[in-house]
Length: 146
Image 1 (cartoon, rainbow, N blue to C red):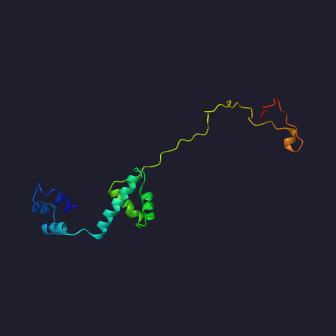
Image 2 (image 1 turned 180 degrees about the vertical axis):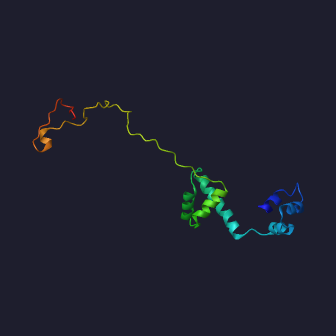
């Protein structure tokens, strides 16, 4: 982090002054600046580009589990924690599922509304009970509950 700070601010201040203030040697800064990128950093950069494409193709809805699953389907076997870390570093976040509205009744219909004490089913006839018990039916289409 110190080396990156020096690199970003080398125009307003001299490198040697910043190195002495930060407590590092100027030789270590120049060695860091001239060092080639590691294999892991190169692989992470390429993987992050692929992950950003997947995230963009999903309209920003895919989080790390889904991005990881897509990567596995395309034969790129990386750990889920690595995917999570790279997404976190790139500030890529999936959208959480919206809470669903539960509707227990459908009152938008043309049927008559329910009246307590009346059944909507057909009346029970003595032949339906099987034991010969008699259930009185007061009206042809309604049966009194109770």
